[in-house]
Amino acid sequence: MQRIDVVRALAPLVTPDDLVVCGLGALWDDWWNYRPGGADNTFFPVILGSISSTALGLAIALPHRRIVALDTDGSLLMNAGVLCTLGSERPGNVTVIVFDNGIYECIGGPPTLTSKNTDLARMAEGAGCINCRTVRDVAAFGEQVRPLLTDDQFGLIVAKIKPGVHPWPTEERRPTDGVEDKYRFMRYVEKLEGIVTHPGAPQN
Amino acid sequence: MGPTYAELMIQGLKEAGVTLVTALPESLLGGFYRAVAQEPGIRYVRVSNEADMPGILAGAYLGGTRAVMVMENSGLRQACEPIARFAFTYHMPLVILMAYRGDLGEYNWWGHAHAQVMEPLLGVLRIPFRVIRTLDEIKPAIKRAVRHADSGQWPVALIFSGQCVEVPPYATD
Image 1 (cartoon, rainbow over the protein chains, first blue to last red):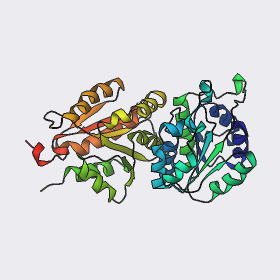
Image 2 (cartoon, chains in turn green, brown):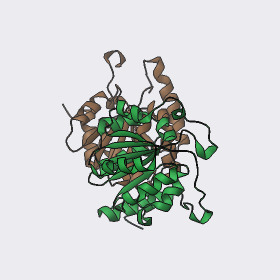
Image 3 (cartoon, rainbow over the protein chains, first blue to last red):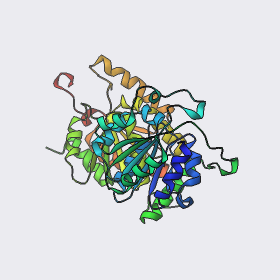
Image 4 (cartoon, rainbow over the protein chains, first blue to last red):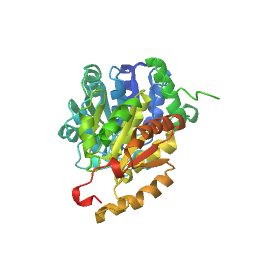
């Protein structure tokens, strides 16, 4: 099971009404191409350690909305303390999916510590998170992630994936930068929720 | 007797439309953390690492909720990386409230480093900040900080000291 296989299995289970916070690395381009309906329902923080905390803030702001965090081993290991925050809050509308390949693949593949003895699902359990599991093949991922997405409880699934980067052609790679991502996502949420987050200047 | 600094902070946050407070408690604003945890209308999220808080604020903002992060000024160093990323890469408004450990007259030798690093760090992060030392400044400063962050799409920091923090008896002048 490679990253792209997990993304392909997940994409049909996520709708444009869901909001997604997507981690960095090759996951960017995979999710960009498979995000539901091509909608701007995904925020892409290029910040190791801040993927799941961003999802938590979004989930608190929009408790009626399903929030999916696409996190990675490198990111969670950067700030494993967020597992304690998630375990304390247990936001029922959040599902965290951890793509765990045991390496920092986009910089050439040096190992992360999950390549040795670190088990992120067990860490999450110890931190107070509920519904934590680890899967190693696509069938198990599909079977295990579906209830997590629909049970109105917090859940975290670690997908142990093998190395491999899908070779997206340049024109199919995510073309946006961070500021554009923010505004696209913000305006999408405004429409979805019927709210105004950033109204602009009151006077020209 | 008028309202305490903690009461004024909470009133200021509510009047500014803040409904989410995330914090890593410390002693100088101890009464604030205890009070906000009991405050109806404000969701209080405790963290164990200041680096959690910029993400929580960013997510909340994108979801239409006004939020602030509260910590000792030493937490600025811990949260520096996500603050820098959210600011420079995303132009994300983050409202940062900090206790000013190491302000003039500090008794604790270990607290001086917090102050020595804080202002230069805020400078390189290009974060506008104000030091709030009197009770009457609290509410207007919070209101303006929230507005400034929103309109500027950039972090803002308020640093509390003087009448706006708690110090043990040995540290009072």
